[in-house]
Image 1 (cartoon, rainbow, N blue to C red):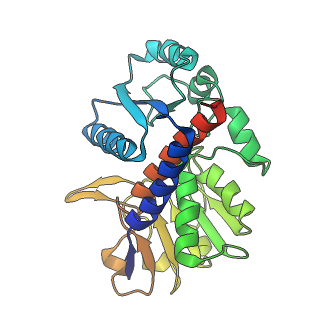
Image 2 (image 1 turned 90 degrees about the vertical axis):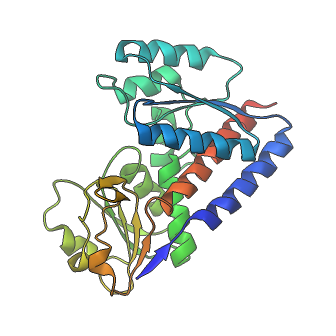
Length: 274
C-alpha cells in the first residue's frame, strides 16, 4: 500500500495563488464563518488563516451566531464592499437551510460553489467556481493517475459539497463516473470495478479489501474521530499488504482543499477587479 501526501501539490497551487495575488496588486479579503465551539474546526480555521497569510490573502474567521442570526449576518457580509469572498464552513448551525444561506450570500462572494448560479454553471459544463474539496479531488486524481479520460471512477457519497459537484468535474475530465450513496445496494460490486475510488461517506472502516481491485487509487475525503485520532473511510490496516494507493488522512486531500479554497478567494478578487 502506498500513501499519498498532498503537501507538494498544495505548495504548487499556493505558488500559483501567490502569483495571482501579486498581479492583482492588493490582498483579497475573505471572512470565514465556522463552528468555533468545535475544537477541530477551530484548529482548521487557524491553519487556514496561516496559509492565507503566506498566499497574501487577508482572511479572518468568526464563529456562527445563533441560528436565527445566521442569515442576517450573511446579508451584512454580502453587502460589505470591502470583502471579496465569504465562506460558510460545514456543518451549518442546526436549523439553517443551506440553500437559503447560499441565496442570502449571493453568487459573487460564494467561494464554495453552493449558490445555484455557480452550481448550475458547473452542472452545465460551463466555467464555474467549484467547491474546494471537489476540485482538490480532481487535481489529486490527475496527479496520481494522470489524465482521467476513459478512467472508471466510483464516488462514495452524494453530498452537495463533494459528491455531486465532483461527479461533474470528473465528467468534464472525460472520466466514466458512477455515483453511489447511502442507499446503494452492494457497494463493493461497484467499487471493485473502479480504477479510482473517492470516498466521502463519513463511515470509518467502510472501504476494505473486498471493495478494491489491485492497482486502485483511493481518495479518502472523510474525517472521522477514532480512538487514536482522525481516520478516514478506508480500513488501512486491512489493506496494508494490498497493491493500492490511498490518500493520507488528513494530509492527503486536506492541504489541497485549502489550496483550492485560497485559489477561489483570489479568483473572486480578480473578478471583482482592483
